[in-house]
Length: 438
Image (cartoon, rainbow, N blue to C red):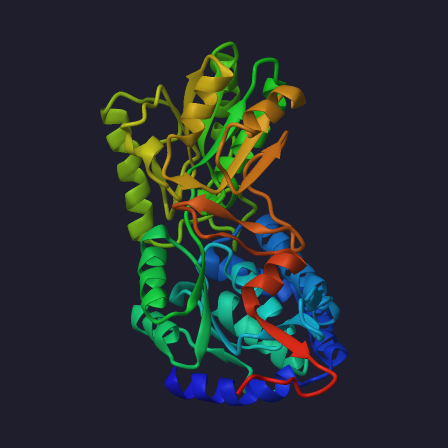
């Protein structure tokens, strides 16, 4: 890591001075390579991350979209002209931070690494990329090879797979000025604390326990479809996964039955060998943790409407009813295909239940738009999707959460990316050397 950081700092100076259109061309070629090799890369996401094919294809589309969107960043306005009380020009300009460390997770390894790597490179920085060791190919080698083939100069992107010691090193390397981390809240807190002591910026996109609110009068069949997608996509291993279903009392029984029917119909298996809806969880430890959360919640009084069991290396899509705030399935980020469900009576009660959570990443509200708008104004969340479920992302949209979900919208879109991966420099210009009283 130390050698990589030193080399990155040296290479970055020439890259920052490279004309904007040359940097943009590298990003465009990277997008074209992701397009040309989409099937091969998706295969790696299936084999290494346990993704079902539809999820893998979706992730590759997000990745190539990220590159094409970031190709516009080098030509984006990089400052502003300020008023001044002096006889001079006063302006700000954005300058690359230098070296950025990107630490990415296993669940969407390609896009969650690339959404920091691509804008950081586009804006003139060098990058140290530390992927999760369980997905070091799809979250690391793929990105490194694409940019190598796209013509990125040597020394600007360093792939550094490894364990927590490597993660600590890419935070502490003196050349690194910004750390971009996506992962668990516990690890994010440790990185944020260490970065703060070292006076480095840390952009932290952390966990979530996201609520889907079904309002009175909502179309139950469509709501259950949205709820199943939100809870079961990629086996629930997404920070935006629907972890809590809040259903108005008038629809609770009907919604529970519809969601349970969806869950029972979802086949679990090996996505590399057969067409399945749910693949394996990332490792045995996570599989056993999910099962323990479910069984402990049932022992505490939750009802089991569907699923609730290990199926090979995967877990059956599960629906829990009558869940209370003290049960682990409601309180914790499960990171598995589990849909805990409870009811609410009034809008104010629904808002209170949504916010009674340490996380604040994403909320979906299904039903009457006017009522949903009123509820949206009452809750704390980095994202609110009216008549959409909780899992959503676009390369040009700001992404992030509040409370234990992270430090705000640090990714996505020109404004957030420029803020994340550049520094502001104040510049003044006088027509002549000023007169001073000394």
